[in-house]
Image (tube, rainbow, N blue to C red):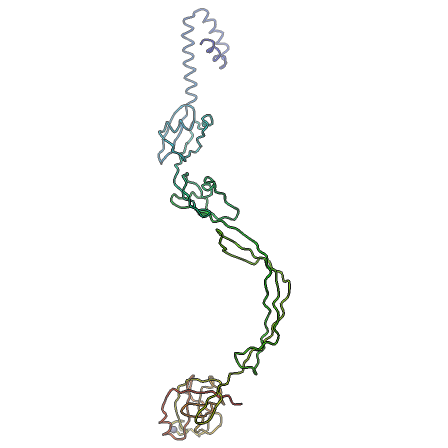
Amino acid sequence: MRLEHLHLLRQIRVEAPLQNLVAFIKKNKKAAVSAAGLLMLVIGCSVYLLGLVDVTVVADGVVTEVRYWGGSVPKALAAAGVTLVPFDETIPAADSDSNANIKLRDGSVLQVLRAVEMTIAADGTTQTIQTVPGTARTILAKAGITIGEYDRVLPDNDQPVPAGTPIRVVRVEIKEVTAQVAVSPPVEERPDPELERGKVQVLEPGKAGVKEQTVRQVFEDGKLKTKEVIAERIMEQPRQRVVKIGTKPPVYTLTTSRGTFRYSQVATMSASAYCPCKICCGPKANGITKSGKKAGYGVVAVDPKVIPLGTQFYIEGYGPAVAADIGSAIKGNRIDLCFETHQEALNFGRRKIQVYILVVN
Ligand SMILES: [Zn+2]
């Protein structure tokens, strides 16, 4: 015991007092033993006091100040009465090697992070793990799920994922596919008044060209999400196609008791009737129409914005007629039929009639 004490005394470099002590021991052995014991007690207390640390433990929303010897993480937890369950973590971390656990100094803060349940959906499966809160990427790393360069992680931010929010990994695959595709030939359309409307006649069939096209395809969890042409190269130019487009109005035939008529259009119009008299045409009426033609049966007034003057008709219940006059009230889909006498005009009144627009030549 004494030698060990001396060794300790030498360590703390008390050379001069040591010589005095040795002399004293030689003189009075009993007293020396007592003095050495006292000295040891003082040194022991000092060493103990030097090793004491005050640590703040933050766990479950509770802040606990603890004073204990050493600085190990488990001892701080024990002093604060905090128990860790599997997957809980601390900052600084509690290592399995107890020698590495001396991490806390006087004034340190030990924070306890409790594990929660997190749901991860990735690669077609959903799993639940216990982990302390963290960003989606850190939690995925703990679950051993690797994230590719283009993969998307939700929620994708630097904030800890709130408990109850599932983490989703969208696998993104990008493919670039090069293929030869047809190039439609440009089409020149030549209107042809000799060809009936609606008919198309091919003059030059043309030929499709060929191009090499590189398409960037983006797949999300194996499903094609977007595609975009990123490069194109013409391998073979297309040859122009030339077609004639018919503009000639179609001609239909109408057979009536008054003869056979060729017409291109038929329309239902609101018809009224008039005669060349001053009642119908006003006090200045001279019986001459807008077009210079004498007013009489077979002359009709139209809205020239709708039907050009000179247009020939066959009008049901009236007969052949020509658009030769206008009238201030004759607008749009209206037609005014001229009769020889005022009585005939009154008899006709107003009615809806079928008007055939005739093809003359
Ligand atoms: Zn009249």
